[in-house]
Image (cartoon, rainbow, N blue to C red; front, side, top):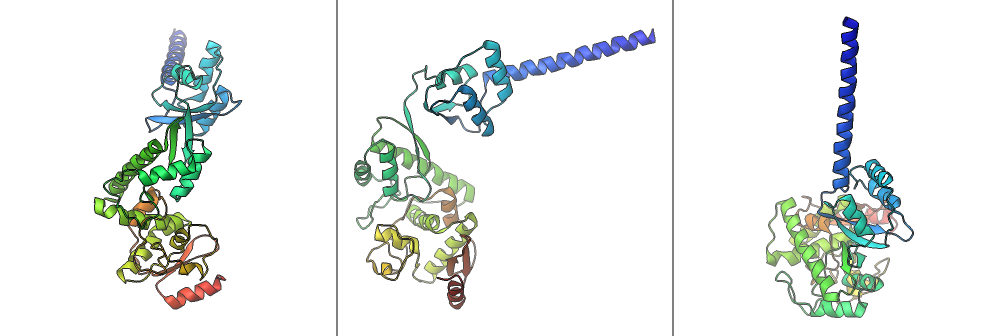
Length: 341
């Protein structure tokens, strides 16, 4: 009798176990089909490349940790014997989309807008951005630059005819989805709106309040940090050198500003380049350049807001891309000689 009870108990435990497993599977399966995408953002960008199938896209999303459960999605496709015919393109997908909505979007059955992905790296100048916009077929480089010059300036940007472009520094470097047929002004607006969002983020993360009258100084310093720093750890240190030199009324002597003043790229700044007569030439004139020399990213804006507390006045780049910092001019000259400059 005891053996029978034990056997019955074992059977009940097995049934309970199988029930729990089945219930867990059903809940996970339903949840995955209802919401296959995961992200902290409201939407994600999915690119369907030429010749790609849905499984290729799923594999890529899974590697990017953007799927709730790739296996259960494939189980669903197998059960339904679903054939997915993707349409090549770039899609912005709401992360709350169901699997059915995701598939329809990638098949372009919902009439999604034809989008162009425009990626602007940190440190790009307006002329670099204009070339990228032209390369993407959004508008010509000349049209973009003309609209940049004519664009109504936000309250935090000072109009100064000595600047090459008043909006230099404020077209935030990021990845944008641009609807085909958009004009230059719409692209500029998107980038300015993103800049304002990032500026607020920088304030929140550094706990430093930025007034409209402070924005240009911060962005100008951030732009020089962006162009000078090669490794992240150097950003607050380069920032400290800039502030220390300003405090001591020393010329900033930053090569990146001279290159911007020249209007063309040089790999090595020579003595002849230092003679260029420009309000961006901080070898020739004291203080900050007349405006930003590039469009900086969030980390450089934060470095401009929170420089490291040092007494450094000089720095020079080492072979590994990091900089050597010192407060002593003789030490700087010795290091320069040691590095073969």
